[in-house]
Structure formats: C-alpha cells, structure tokens
Length: 121
Image 1 (tube, rainbow, N blue to C red):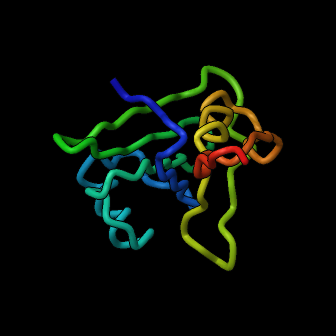
Image 2: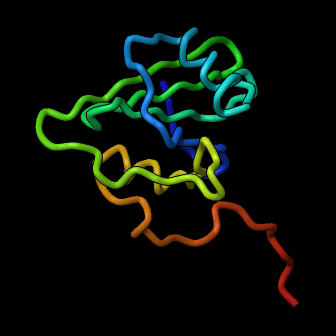
C-alpha cells in the first residue's frame, strides 16, 4: 500500500508529461529531465497536458509504484511552479494530499514536517 508520510521527499514535475509512458518512461523522465534518481525513494508527481490526470511514481525498495488519478470532471488547476526555472517543485506531504484532491496546495498551512525534539528546560 502506498502511504504518503511527512518525511517523504515529494517532487512535482512542472511541465506536463506524456501519459502514454509507464514506469520505465517516467523513471527516465526523472533522470533526464528532473535530474533525480528515481531509485532513491522520492515521490514523483506528473500531470498530463490537459490537466485532467496525474500519475505518482515511487520506488519502495522492492519495486516501483505507479498510481494514476483521472478526474471525472474539471482539471488540476493549481499546479506548482518551480523556482528559478527548475524542472520540479518540492511539496510537503499535506500539500500533495490537497493536490490529489484537486485543491490548491499553495493555500495550505501546517507546521514543519520534521523538527528535532528538544528536552524541556
């Protein structure tokens, strides 16, 4: 089962992907376009050109997961943009969940995903 946790590194491809691509094609996009190693366990999110579907690619140590969601109506309108012409934008886990629900991940607020626990003084 695929579970999104706050400690995961989540990268969203800024440009649309060809959705005829499967696991191997999207893994190649990770390497060639996003300049990331898909075998390191990051979660990669891709959108089709029309904005009606997304694919999530992740390696869990045993194999790849490829999940797809296609909206029955509407589009994913609030797609993250990369900074400084980057090919991918980084999202927090709670932002990805909002994006998967076709919401705006930029308008969510939450505390930092991780911070060291300090002993009280």
